Length: 259
Ligand code: PGA
Image (cartoon, rainbow, N blue to C red; front, side, top):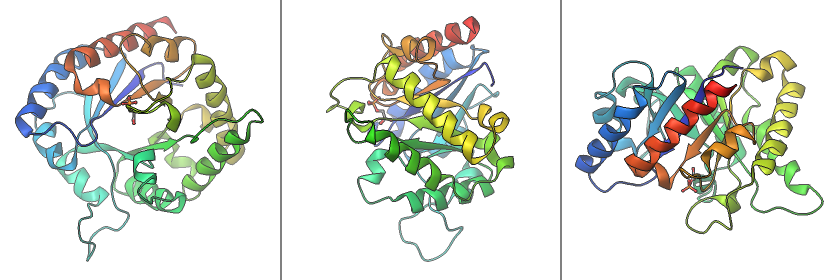
C-alpha cells in the first residue's frame, strides 16, 4: 500500500460562481502543492472542471468530477462522458455517491460508469455505505453487495485505478447523526479489504486505497487515518472552506509520515 494519503474534496453543487470556485481553489492549491505525502483531488461541478484544471501544475493536486455517464457519445441529453471529462483535464471521477443513488443510481449503473471511466483513463472513486446500522451486522451485507456489483466488470489489472470510499449515509451532510467513529471506519475497511481479497487476491486488494467520508473536519480528520486506518478522506462541506481544507491536508501529511 502506498503510504501517501489521498484527500478528495467533493464540492457537490457549490460554490455559486466560477470566481468563487477559482478563489477557493487557489487557496487549496497553495497548501496542496507543498505536501509530498498527500495526493489532493478536487471534484467541482462539471462546469468548473476545465477552468480549474488549467490552474493545476505538478502532480500533487488533480481534478476530478462528481459523476459521469457510461456511453461515449450520443443522444443522451444532459449527460457527460468520462472521455469528455478526461479531455478537459479531469483524472478522477466519483461514482455511486449516496446523493446520486438517492436520485435513482443503481449498483448496475455504478458498475457501467466504473467500467467506462477506467476505459477513458480516469481513476474511479467508488462510494459505498449503508443507510443505517443494525445490531446484527446486516449493514455489512449491503456494503458487500455494493462492492461486488460495482466491481463486477473490473479486471485485476485495473485495480491500481480504483479507490473505494466508505461513506455511511447516516454520517454525511447537514443531517448527519454523527461522524463515524475511527472504530467504525477500521471495521468496515477490514470488511472491504476482505471482499476485495475474495474477488481478486490478497496482493491486488492491498493496492486499493480505502477512504472515509462523512462529516470530516479539521478536528476529527486525523483519527480516521491514524486510528481508523483510512488511506485518505472524502470531504464534503469542509472542502469548500480553503482554510479548513488546508488544515485537513496538513494533518494528512503528518499522518502519512507516521506510517
Ligand atoms: P460531508 O459530505 O463531508 O459534508 O458530510 C461528504 C460527502 O458526501 O462526500
